[in-house]
Length: 219
Image (tube, rainbow, N blue to C red; front, top):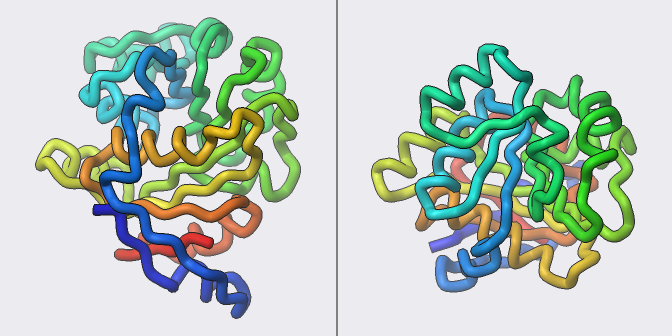
């Protein structure tokens, strides 16, 4: 079951927003079937989410620096790997799971020139969008699916048949299906994981800094 609480809303400088609760039946993996998912980065969240998405039967390719440490790790884990521009080309969903400090440069140099028109751009943190460090095309969905746990626990709970809570948000809904994509990514990363939704990721960076919490909120 997807559940949520009020902590996230109340952390936003005292602004309390209405919450929405989503159950497992609200998320449909069919929203991602037949779509190519490019996971950019293979660190804390990148590895965990890529493995979970792959094990959920989805088409996943990891974008990494060729012959680097992450490249070798992906190969050892048995996933498809490609250099970032090649991973992004033709991808229907591009998951930016790199550290915040390198996201703007990698996006500008390697992601943006290869991003398919109409693709969904996904983040696990709202920093780059909130502070206008990345400006996606108006034709792209821009969503967030942020597990409230380190990657190691995301993967561990997935293999145990459960999951960790997650925040989801829709910053830009070009297709009309952005929320469905975000919910599907949450479901694929740890069923039956708690998840929640709010229409914009504008205030997402602030509660992220407070640590992983046992429950979350949506507006």
